[in-house]
Image 1 (cartoon, helix red, strand yellow):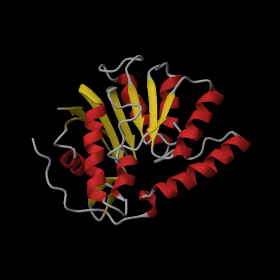
Image 2 (spheres, helix red, strand yellow):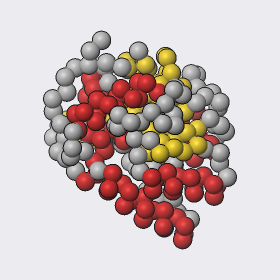
Image 3 (cartoon, rainbow, N blue to C red):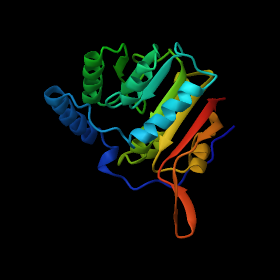
Length: 223
């Protein structure tokens, strides 16, 4: 199956640059070392908790299932799962500062979570997790950030989708939350590698006579 051609791109932004995220997580690392605050939860805790609740209720996932958080940032998603007894957890991020922060937080909270510096948009990303497919890959905002990259955005999005497919086990799951793409757009973008399994509902609002939501969360199965 071939993915539909995605010709429409988002306007580029500093949020699509590694420099921006290194700066953000550098500040949050300093703040954590001084005050013990892990920093911002991307898209808010309600959004994070909806995905965590789905993981906990899924009949296809167990506490020993291998789970990777792609673009883990401060590691908040994995901390929630660790607190609920999940033991095979990995976080990856292309920002070294994010990994440094996530490791510091996990150590302070005494959670056994593995973190690796990996850039899935790079052709030289075969370090660390390559060859170790996961039962579940999780993305909350990472594909959004890649979609805002000012340089070679189509190439990087394509490399990212291919990499996610590679690190997901056969018949494994991929759950993605986006604030920039709708459910239908995400399903279209990833159709070459995944089929839709489920949509995790999020609060809706009405504007101009149309109903929408601030985020879209789709659960995919690898094909």
